[in-house]
Length: 113
Image (tube, rainbow, N blue to C red; front, side, top):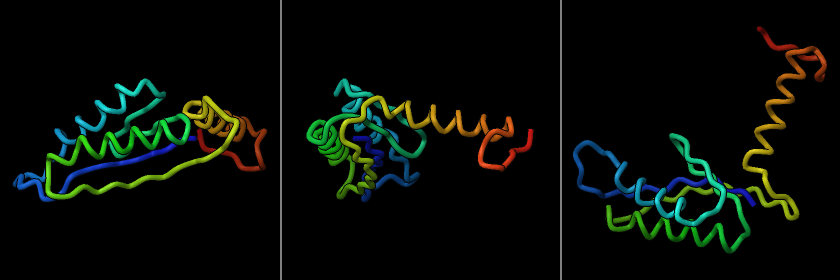
Protein backbone atom coordinates (compact mmCIF):
# COMPACT_ATOMS: atom_id res chain seq x y z
CA UNK A 1 0.00 0.00 0.00
CA UNK A 2 0.96 3.61 -0.46
CA UNK A 3 0.17 6.29 2.04
CA UNK A 4 0.63 10.02 1.91
CA UNK A 5 0.55 11.72 5.27
CA UNK A 6 1.21 14.99 6.97
CA UNK A 7 1.66 15.34 10.69
CA UNK A 8 2.15 18.57 12.61
CA UNK A 9 1.77 19.86 16.14
CA UNK A 10 -0.46 22.70 17.22
CA UNK A 11 -0.32 24.64 20.43
CA UNK A 12 3.43 24.99 20.05
CA UNK A 13 3.65 28.40 21.64
CA UNK A 14 5.94 29.56 18.80
CA UNK A 15 5.16 33.07 17.60
CA UNK A 16 6.35 32.32 14.05
CA UNK A 17 4.10 29.24 13.71
CA UNK A 18 7.00 27.16 12.39
CA UNK A 19 6.78 23.39 12.77
CA UNK A 20 9.95 22.37 10.93
CA UNK A 21 11.62 20.86 14.01
CA UNK A 22 8.61 18.65 14.66
CA UNK A 23 8.35 17.66 11.00
CA UNK A 24 12.06 16.79 11.02
CA UNK A 25 11.46 14.45 13.95
CA UNK A 26 8.63 12.75 12.03
CA UNK A 27 10.67 12.42 8.84
CA UNK A 28 13.55 10.92 10.84
CA UNK A 29 11.15 8.15 11.91
CA UNK A 30 10.16 7.53 8.29
CA UNK A 31 13.77 7.38 7.12
CA UNK A 32 14.75 5.03 9.94
CA UNK A 33 11.95 2.64 8.94
CA UNK A 34 13.80 1.49 5.84
CA UNK A 35 10.57 1.57 3.82
CA UNK A 36 10.51 3.25 0.41
CA UNK A 37 9.50 6.88 0.97
CA UNK A 38 9.48 10.37 -0.50
CA UNK A 39 9.07 13.68 1.31
CA UNK A 40 7.75 16.79 -0.43
CA UNK A 41 6.90 20.24 0.87
CA UNK A 42 3.43 19.12 2.00
CA UNK A 43 3.37 15.33 2.49
CA UNK A 44 5.49 12.27 3.07
CA UNK A 45 4.69 9.15 1.04
CA UNK A 46 5.54 5.69 2.33
CA UNK A 47 5.13 2.28 0.68
CA UNK A 48 4.84 -1.04 2.46
CA UNK A 49 2.49 -3.53 4.04
CA UNK A 50 -0.42 -2.28 6.15
CA UNK A 51 1.13 -2.98 9.57
CA UNK A 52 4.55 -1.61 8.55
CA UNK A 53 3.16 1.63 7.18
CA UNK A 54 0.78 2.24 10.07
CA UNK A 55 3.61 1.63 12.54
CA UNK A 56 5.61 4.35 10.78
CA UNK A 57 2.66 6.75 10.96
CA UNK A 58 2.24 6.06 14.68
CA UNK A 59 5.96 6.56 15.23
CA UNK A 60 5.83 9.87 13.36
CA UNK A 61 2.87 11.05 15.43
CA UNK A 62 4.66 10.02 18.63
CA UNK A 63 7.76 11.94 17.50
CA UNK A 64 5.73 15.12 16.92
CA UNK A 65 3.72 14.96 20.16
CA UNK A 66 6.38 16.60 22.39
CA UNK A 67 6.37 19.73 20.19
CA UNK A 68 2.83 20.88 21.01
CA UNK A 69 -0.30 20.31 23.01
CA UNK A 70 -1.97 18.35 20.19
CA UNK A 71 -1.14 16.70 16.87
CA UNK A 72 -2.91 16.95 13.52
CA UNK A 73 -2.66 14.01 11.12
CA UNK A 74 -3.82 13.94 7.48
CA UNK A 75 -3.56 10.55 5.80
CA UNK A 76 -4.51 9.24 2.37
CA UNK A 77 -4.02 5.57 1.44
CA UNK A 78 -3.93 3.65 -1.85
CA UNK A 79 -4.53 0.03 -0.89
CA UNK A 80 -3.78 -2.22 -3.88
CA UNK A 81 -2.86 -5.77 -2.84
CA UNK A 82 -0.22 -7.52 -4.92
CA UNK A 83 1.49 -4.36 -6.17
CA UNK A 84 4.89 -3.08 -5.10
CA UNK A 85 7.14 -0.37 -6.47
CA UNK A 86 4.18 1.96 -6.88
CA UNK A 87 5.88 4.90 -5.20
CA UNK A 88 7.75 5.40 -8.47
CA UNK A 89 5.60 3.25 -10.77
CA UNK A 90 2.54 5.51 -10.58
CA UNK A 91 4.61 8.58 -11.41
CA UNK A 92 6.37 6.80 -14.29
CA UNK A 93 3.01 5.77 -15.81
CA UNK A 94 1.74 9.33 -15.47
CA UNK A 95 4.80 10.78 -17.18
CA UNK A 96 4.46 8.21 -19.98
CA UNK A 97 0.81 9.17 -20.48
CA UNK A 98 1.71 12.86 -20.60
CA UNK A 99 4.42 12.14 -23.16
CA UNK A 100 1.93 10.16 -25.28
CA UNK A 101 -0.46 13.11 -25.24
CA UNK A 102 2.37 15.47 -26.24
CA UNK A 103 3.24 13.17 -29.12
CA UNK A 104 -0.38 13.10 -30.26
CA UNK A 105 -0.76 9.41 -29.43
CA UNK A 106 -2.98 9.83 -26.40
CA UNK A 107 -6.72 10.11 -26.00
CA UNK A 108 -7.14 12.81 -28.64
CA UNK A 109 -5.86 15.58 -26.38
CA UNK A 110 -2.66 17.41 -27.12
CA UNK A 111 -0.58 19.47 -24.74
CA UNK A 112 1.17 22.72 -25.59
CA UNK A 113 4.94 22.58 -26.14
